[in-house]
Image 1 (cartoon, rainbow over the protein chains, first blue to last red):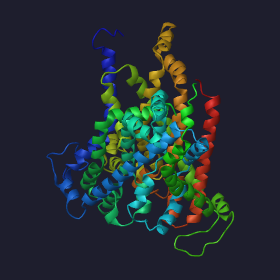
Image 2: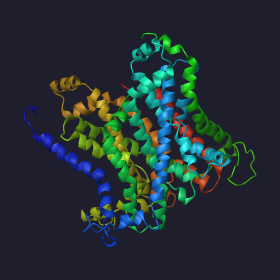
Image 3: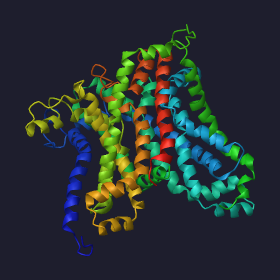
Image 4: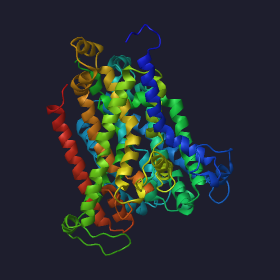
Amino acid sequence: MNPTAGLSKSRLLVTVLMLVAGAFMIVPFLWMISTSFQSASEVFSRWLPSKLDWSNHKRIWTGNYNFVPYYMNSLKVSLISTAGAVFLSAFAAYGFARVEFKGRNALFLVYLSMMMIPPQVIFVPKFIMFNWMNIYNTHWALILPGMFSIFGVFMLRQFFMGVPREITESAFLDGAGHFKIFFRLILPLAKPALATFAIIDFSWHWNDYENALVFLTSPKLYTIPLGLQNFILENNVDYNGMMAASSAAIVPMIAIFLLGQKYIIQGIASSAVKG
Amino acid sequence: MKRHSWMRKQQWAGYAFILPNMVGILLFFIIPALFSFGLMFTNYQFANPNVSFTGLDNLKRMFQDDQFYRAIQHTAIFLLSVPVSLVLAFLVALVLNRSVYLKGLLRGMFFLPYISSGVAVAFVWMLLFQPSHGPINEALRWIGIASPPGWFADSDTAMYAIDIVQVWFMLGYNMIIYLAALQEVSAEQMEAATIDGAGKGTITWKIVWPLVSPTTFLLLVTGLIMTMKSFAIIQAITQGGPSGSTTILSLYVYKTAFSYYEMGYASTVSWFLFAVILVITIVQWIGQKRWVHY
């Protein structure tokens, strides 16, 4: 292969083949969007709608199966959880990365071991405890635990350890305390890492189905995944409506991905390779 | 490494930084985990005030429970998706790393399923795999397969159909990690092999594949653990059916606790799940030292 020869034929061929393979990966999304614009008689019979039928989307946003409250609930839960998780994880990550205190390694080992506990182990006790705490079947049952992310502590600790120690050291010798260093020096430097974690954490809360399933029972509190499930249970032959509803859930994530692609991919790559 | 004595000053600050997070970890992870461990030895049922200590009864019951053994089998089939998606991801990463145009676009296309995960995607697959009119079976009939599989509707194929969705979902994540690992494989190593007359296949499987083995090992372990914990896609598509054929262990725990309210017994099964994850983690610790070529 001659790299100076402009377009190489074999490389072009491989690109085309990979585009076909890639198309298979995104076909479910295209089919979903296409079906959401078809009329009921067209579903399963053609790839593209004969004309854009907006009625499915209207049905999702108005009328009996109104997705607006689900959307608002999901936004509320995801935004507050993510904001809390970013702040609290960054705080703890700094403590683990930049202060040598007694018992630090033991504490970190406790964090490590908590990663092995599957969520199924703690669903039942959380269910009982949340009943005692009177937060069962409220958004707090998702938000409060959602503000504590072990993954976030790990990821940000990793990043903070990569910040040259000399930067913090010279600030320290100039008389700055840890809090000043954290807020004035480290946080501004860590913006890309914080953004990466925020995006990953937000998408996790946005898509979280299992916790909502266990801790929410009132339909008016439902987040999007539960709202979607409810819609499908009650309209299981309304395929166009199902796909319009699914689009409403997925399209914001696709938008966030397209906007933050660089952060997400770099963040995921760096957090795992060094692990 | 240079000692940084300043890091040992103001130790109180270390506790102050960690305390807010620690409170939450204690309240929402550690205490519930201990609580659950205790529940394992009781016959606790939700809304039933008669709770008594039953010792090892739940464990005995578990080892005689047919549904438990079936759940293990289904989990094993579910876990097949991990190595399959790893090998596919490696091949895609290999091609994207060296020999394509439009690398960014292609990478995005393969990664998209991972970020848009969740219930919505599960419902799309439910329709794609719809047996009588769904597009996948229409396509199979079009290429001459007269009676394509029933996918989620058939208890013999449902678990494998779930695997397809899971591979599709995990592929992009694994690909991103492999792409990062391949960046570290030096061009010189590749060139030296080419000059020695090694063919492309030989280079890939004898040189590149061993060089990325730490990554493969890490992805295998984390993938197995993650897959073992997750049941959202299955709950959304089949709720464990048809006739229990997709009830994996994690879903079995959920159903035992929240459909049948047998919360003591559910805790026992959930600790079995933990034990499996613990074993995988220990194998990882040992294996990282022994089997992986650095």
